[in-house]
Length: 58
Image (tube, rainbow, N blue to C red; front, side, top):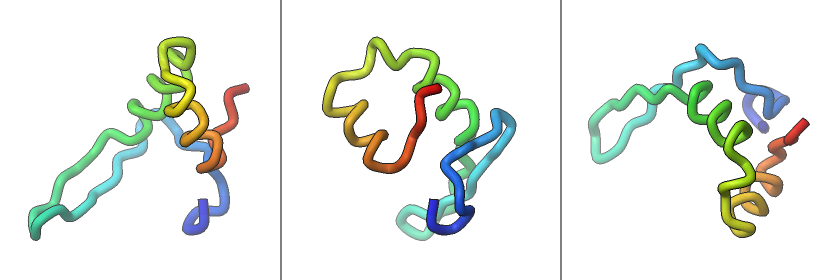
């Protein structure tokens, strides 16, 4: 949220991260959409963590 000013992530969005010196491309938009769609299957801790990051479920 700090970088973009919003927690909204469009489905086609991809993000590149670096782990142990290697770049990995993540389908962040798909992951985000899946979390929202399957929120009833998330644990309370998972929903709380996402809410603390600013995820809006509507």
